[in-house]
Image (tube, rainbow, N blue to C red):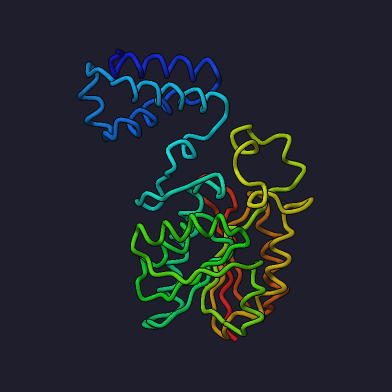
Length: 286
């Protein structure tokens, strides 16, 4: 039997040797012991049972070989809540929290006092945007769509687990809503935006495990924005808010696409906490 501190020391040096984050060992051990950080640190001299030790060692080996910690534990934090993730969906990232925060702030100012607002999250993936928007702004009626049925299954699981009432739709971008004549007040999306040519420079952890359908969008990474901006005029109400997460350096191009689709819209590019253009909002008030 090994003690907690021995397992942590082994994992730290093993992961460091393999060029991975040595702190991942602690996250994995907390997952298998079902302890929070303070309790784990208080139990450093505790013996691990053989089953936990084996599961932990196997997980450390998986991570050393490139599997993201979040896919091993099946969970990731987003906006203060724990979401389920699988290899069918992208791992939620802090930049997307900024899209949610920015959308919430703008909704209150742009639709003052209006309660019955309808929001669509296009390409919902794990559902973090849709679920968080519903829980942070319960008066919203939220719909979430995705082309991947496997992703929708993960999103539905998260909505159910976190108690968010959301309508899920399987379909390609805005096509289901154009066909049904459905319109929305708010449309948010974190679509694929990585140029195909960037595949070679992406880390093995990303390109080897996260779904390529949710990562790549043509030669310049703008293919999905082009499609969305063509389809958006058919599904937004006369007064509407649109918010996209974008790749760094894509702000001007995506803003131009939105301005072409909505000539009278107020379009703004928002930088993330690292000073990179990361979100584009368009306020439409025809």
